[in-house]
Length: 319
Image (cartoon, rainbow, N blue to C red; front, side, top):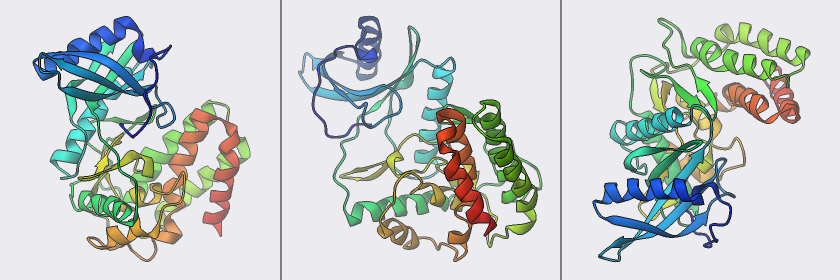
């Protein structure tokens, strides 16, 4: 998404490929019902896991300046993943009542060698205490929307990994979490050859015990962002804007455990959440449980150097 940054020459950026850029200009022009031509690009390589940029252009004949966020993927399932992302953003906005960037056109342009996601660019502001509180309030509003079952009516993606959203009739949240979230990630981390057999066995033993040992005060399925780490929220002048969701119905503690997964967040985020919804006193003791699937996903994608953090989590849960 768009953040303040310096304009860079297009250079060898994949989005500056002439054929790709021509297709994007056509799609953006159709969306605006006027001719739009890219004049410069802000590379967001330092902020995104995919090649991303803000495309800056002018509308003819008015000369109006229009900025569009673009994200490229060369994955085989790139178009499907981006369409799922657009669907998730719509669900968060329409059903969750929170801010999300609007798609440009239908949001997805298939290009040679992959696909590009096009969204309205969002101008970021610096984060102070109020911005952190607003992220907390945004999550609380989202979690106030309730469903009838864990999962979702369409499968999704957690980063590049498939997300099985099929409901498990009669299952508790912990049972759903174990079967639909952690076991698939464990299988992927093991198949990638990144997880030692002894660690995998420890995870298996823990998963066998969790459903009987974790008691939650509220089992009502809540609408979740699903990948609510802090970088998946942009602080704008209008308030927090959610991006990159893995939408599902689940337990709110899953999102709360994610917000500081990659880096600490100020207490203000949780204070903002508590303005609208309580956080159960047992959450701190359960936080690492709801991070197991993330540890395994990172190991599956990024490699065995992340195994020590998983082992530390297993030690923490055991204690």
